[in-house]
Image (cartoon, rainbow, N blue to C red; front, side, top):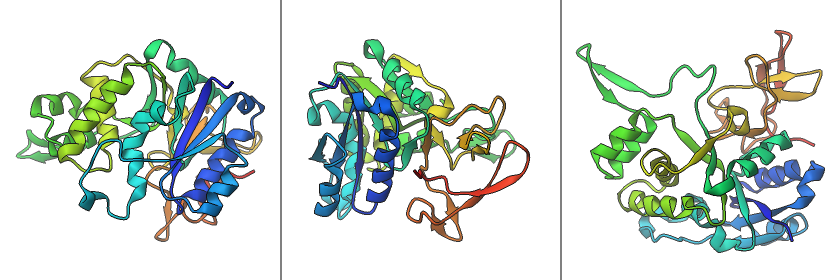
Length: 303
């Protein structure tokens, strides 16, 4: 019986990305000891049939917290904003859960091992979206020289979700936590903390992003014990492009010592000529190599 599981979710449109994520996991021999489970948020029957040859389980995602129908009409993929906080309900036979968004892929198995280790003893394993080379962490609008209006992602969403200004202020300049890759043990108190906060954020705020705000509340307000992993464990390409090591044929961090990217995450997309790399694998962009030159590369997984 496999003790650890990697879980993701997709609809029919994002099936190609999900398929690539699974292939990126299975390229490593170590993956034989880890289950792969999928939440279905609108996959086609033929897509699910193809996936069953590669994964352990597929289950339909649900609205585990009731949300107004007008907010989610024809957007089944929004279930990812709720269902990922209830993974033990869907797949109850595992000890540790690693969630990876379907627009991410595994480039180095060490990151997978780190996430499973990070959630020991009930801790949350996760990565903050801040690191070397990040030039802006929060936005403000300056008024009359000294006064400013806070526009940080956490603060804006917190205010809209009506969680109260005292809580919103605690989140205002806290380093944002991306929920696209995280790990938790089955009995971690993190699940109930996250679910309670999510119930609150969904009542008044946007559906999209509510689960991220809720986990930020768990960490910075509820003080959930958290193991913060390095940025290369959840490398968000839209925030900072990687470099490419042509000798090792792999993506690496853009600054010394150029650590290997562990999990490449295409959150928010990589856009060129109005087209998103997530939906068009033919798109390539110019990135630096380690010799100071440039190469044209897709940031999606390829065998």
